[in-house]
Length: 314
Ligand code: COA
Ligand code: MG
Image 1 (cartoon, protein in one colour):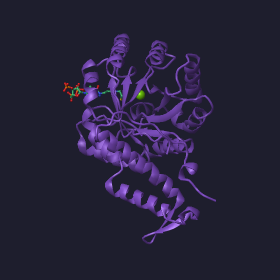
Image 2 (cartoon, protein in one colour):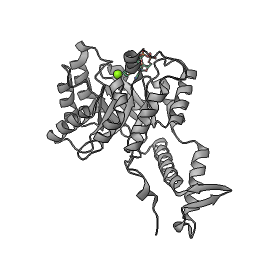
Image 3 (spheres, protein in one colour):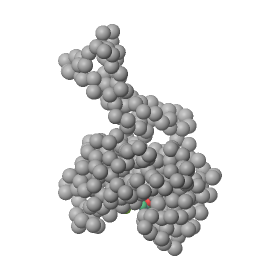
Image 4 (cartoon, protein in one colour):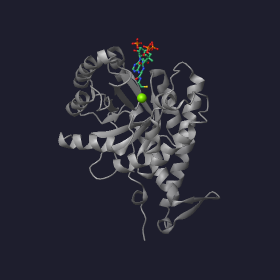
């Protein structure tokens, strides 16, 4: 029987989401800066970083910005206010008008928060390419992470990605900020487990102290080891370190290429394990290796100036 790595792989989108920069849609100066920044994705925030008096102006800014600046190569996500608030309905109408890559739902507590929006997008005939991201940032959101992820993957739903929000979670639970995030790690890993079970991705929470480089380096390293695809950022200063930590390094790329070559040897088609310089490598490692090399190629294309981030499943 012949094997193909892509047959075995979960349907996880291979996109770059190392650095996901949030920008208040009310801040035109910051919006104007985006085209010069090297982040993989931008979250245009209409929610907590925009005061109630500025919500309408922020929507208008976004409309103008989307028409003028398509930001090629960057995923564009609009974070809306809760549909239960006074602003949510207008925000969602703007999303269906502007058709960004995704809408980010705040404070998702239960599966219905996602499936409800999925239904509304379908009713509005929004294209399938308009995906849903969910902020997991409440105690109920953490407890229900698996059922939210599961519901999000059922037919008709567009869920792609979870973003952890520790500012809200700390506020709700009383857990204090602390280097190493010891008391938060079990909840963070629960989110990673939920997305892994259903072929989604998770983005780690922001670090508020954008001038504390050492703390940011440490938190990026920790988030990468925990299995997050990238980090939500609040300031351009944080982009370079996030790209470095969440992107594959030279050694990892070389190893992935060696694994791909080993399984491409004549006769290896029928093998599930091979000997790579005295180390057992399994076919499951081939899936990871292919995904990693694909990401490395996307990064290479980006730095060589090729526009667009091709979406494909590896
Ligand atoms: N996106 C794009 N550009 C940004 C930016 C962002 N998130 N944050 C700052 N900048 C720009 C500033 O406009 C400034 O540009 P300039 O050189 O043209 O003047 C430059 O980067 C340097 O900014 P700085 O002076 O260091 O910070 P600031 O006082 O302007 O802003 C914050 C600090 C925290 C208010 C701002 O970074 C911010 O609003 N971040 C996002 C907050 C957010 O989205 N919260 C919700 C999710 S938790
Ligand atoms: Mg929040």
